Length: 83
Image (cartoon, rainbow, N blue to C red; front, side):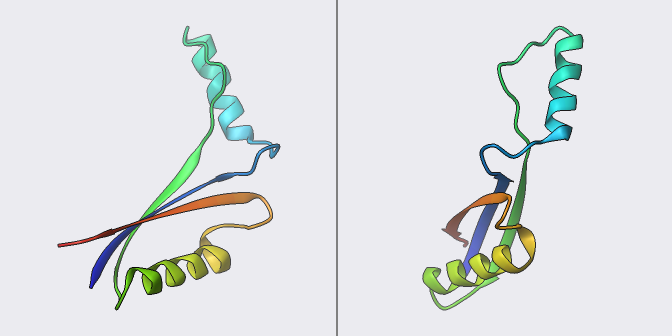
């Protein structure tokens, strides 16, 4: 079965994000004040696996081994069947 998986990776609470802080400051200078701003990465992965559980397991392993640093990142995996 073909699956489309979306992986969203962001920093854990309390981790400093200098890039987001810089963008937040720039937005304020342009007249767009914000209460907070966060940056996240999003990966879209297409996989052919026997089940959604197998697809989830494979993508979870990808996150742990390469896509995310479990010390500083949280990640969320969403799986949909592709047609």
